[in-house]
View (spheres, rainbow, N blue to C red):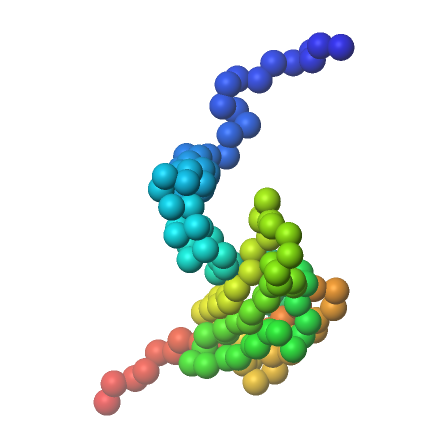
Length: 155
């Protein structure tokens, strides 16, 4: 059955299409034996730094930052606050050694990550708490009194 609607060419192409195409081209280029596939592939593409996807939502009494950390446990993740900056970092290690067999497709990212977020002035840093369940970390940041400006009389 034919589709009843038509799409403009390129309408479903992401804004990152050009960069993705260049990256695919570079990967294919390193597969040619004449260019030393073994020389290029291992150091460039064996482990990739990655960034977990996050979502920040403002609710009545708090901000909630949710981070997707699939395949990690709470022991693999470190959370800190320093000078009004919240830092989330950790490492996702490869699950298996490549002693026997070869990998033909690797789309899963491994390696270290670090994300930092400047907190709003009204967050009470000492009351921040985090929950980790099923690869999802929820960081609850309670709001406090915002510093109010006031008029200062000059004498």
